[in-house]
Length: 434
Image (cartoon, rainbow, N blue to C red; front, side, top):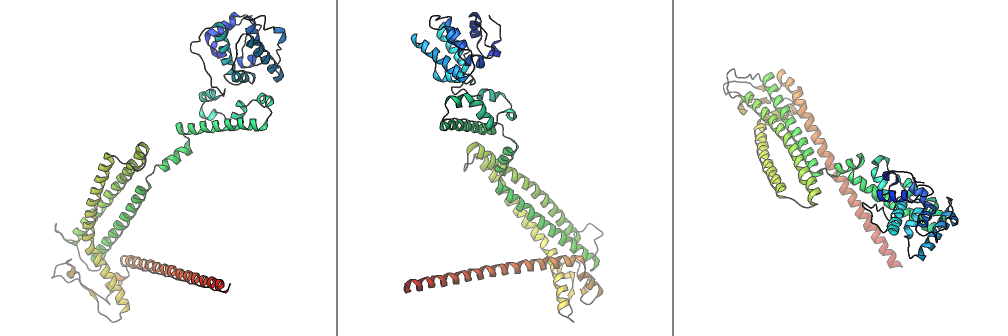
């Protein structure tokens, strides 16, 4: 009987399928691994070429392990008479229905009996694993470690060789191969966790820390400068009765507005500069590390770094200029706070504030505020002066805390040294006594 079957379903080349159909076998192998594992069908194939040496009544169609081993043993003995042999690994793989073993067995039998070569020959792995099948599956559908051991270590293998150490070594080989494939999968198609770890590893942490410190310093400087300038304007307008010039003249208020705008511009420029610095850190550390390895740079990286160094010096000069221009309003603000503080300590002292000494108002105008007046007390109790007082008090507290911490460290070190000296002397005395 012969039944037409697609080569794709059997996993065999087309010429091998046609050859099997021409032999008029007792049954056609629909499932090659299952039908050839017993050896009965292989013996029937050889009986068409060597009928005297392959008597089919000597073979059994059973599916038990003992029946399979007995059939294949008779096949090997019969082939030795004609100086033919089959690979032992292929026979064992066929008995245990290993992936690719039966297909390779049929191809060897075909080439050995017909003396023909096979086009597009299929050569499965020598260890007959299901790796080729697993590669066709999506990542989430592939076998786990326990399933891989179950698929590649058959129960018949354990029954054929019931040695515990041998089967353990086979399982360890399968497990190690499975872990290697999993590691290769993570490299080719990493998951969310691997992507996150890789992204975190590629972050230029020095550039990130530098950017955070840059933003913190700019925010502190610009915030304090804005507060000092705004407080100065409020004090001059509310307590010294200094008004803006009606004409477009360069008075103190205009200068303060210009300095404010410069501070805002520098803050925006440093914000953009921080982003560029972070991007430059990614390009010069992350990308170059991946392409060229650690501790290597390129010409482009050197040029970009040099450009950023030059830009840093330009920003530093602008920063110094703003610091110099804002020193006068801050100095006025600090002097007002200092006089308010001394007026509460020195009772009966006559302390006055005259904006003419700073060039804020013309010499002819008298805008003096002296201690003991209502304006003076209101000015000292205003939020603008309280801000500077609180800031100074916090600074003094932090400074004292740092000194106390240093004192505690020195004291603990001295105590440790004294303890070490006493222990050393005690040991010396004990040794001398001994």
